[in-house]
Image (cartoon, rainbow, N blue to C red; front, side, top):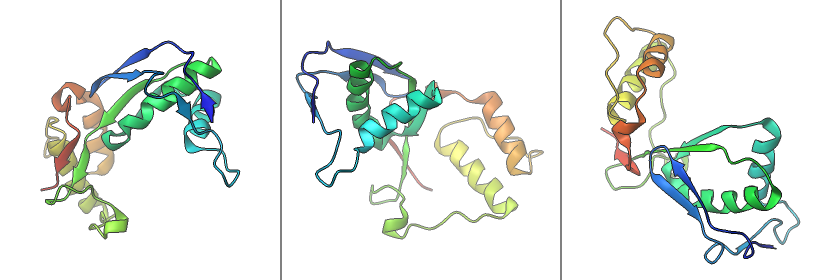
Length: 162
């Protein structure tokens, strides 16, 4: 473990969820090596992101709490803090996130199925619908990238699959 209690509080503005704070009074001890000798995920991801020059981290909103630990480790190690964006997690009707472990329905990988899935994801994330002329995954993704608006899902931790 590493004791981070001497560090000041740091707050970053997540581009979807708002402020995420590292408060050393709440996040004092961070595991950096597990009992079995393996380096913890928290330390590994912080060092790996810094080594790779990562400037933006995009991941599911179910992982937002881990960000506080990572902020503390970044600060303790003198590493740059990337920008964060936590996307809403897609859930099943029972509120549980889609997951292979729960045997959620897999995404089909044919072009027409991917186009339909991408259109559905854009709708779930409240983004502009791609024009009907966009008929390939590449065209849908290019449209989505050009029109992407994080403000449309700001504050959402999850969205229910249709």
